[in-house]
Length: 123
Length: 286
Image (cartoon, rainbow over all chains, first blue to last red; front, top):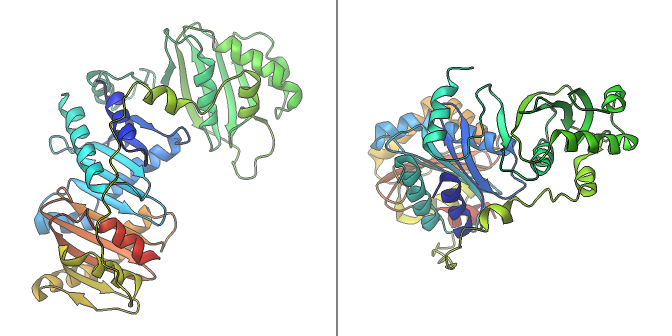
């Protein structure tokens, strides 16, 4: 299964996911994405920037001090939920997602983590 | 070619996904196996909301450069190897009378089974209040192209697993206090130490004093940069926002930083905070 199909399996399993993207955070580039048709390139670029911001100082620095480098971030706003996971093997590899509030967050995180691991390791 | 692109191209290749990058910096949007590439051409235009210059080139040597904004084609800036482009090229802004010519140009450009590349440049027109040019939806209708058919096409091959209704985590109703205070308390014991800065519950905290003191020192030192970080994640400065950072968020420790109604909460969570986090946030904002 290619990366696009792996991402598609996430959106198929969790229809509340508006977009799921695999990105290279070091270059701020979305390499592949899946989601609703009205998600534009501008949305994906913004999602990638937000992933970088989430794993940025000052909160990143506090996290490193407190318990080590974080690999998971969640951003909740009034209208949406964004989830960003970095690969533990290569922290530049990340999966970025924006979804509706009604999603099963625990299951969704597990699915995203499994998908990121598969993509990152080429499984 | 920008050398920084090389590792990214190599990565795309290794991922065995369709590479959307061409060596000269553009994106490959149609391949030789594509029987009807005009669909992707129109979808690319439709997805371009901001003012942009789109430069389409084909492996046959033809090219079309158009200015777009707000899902409208404003003008044709250049056309190479495409006959009959003059009326569109001469128009300062495309109007209804140009639609048939434009359709012929797009059809001549997007011939079946050839590679088409797209380079996107900055546009000169703002997209606010665009009411000129030709709507891409109109061109798509005339060509019987469905602009929003991506979901069905791409996902149809993937059998969705049976849907399991997510169990609603039990979040105790917390009444009284500020929104940010209600959020902190609704998370329950998983939020082991927290402190509020600003607003009606300024200085309120819970948890071991040593931990709270550490959080306070951080907030005192970093409040300006922390506010800027939250603003970069918000649609507008000062908007309610919550950022959680952790190794996994479902085990170990995590940091929670939330802002609402002029107050900022900083807290340390232990264990699985995903069970309560979202409901606590939504109920606090109500």
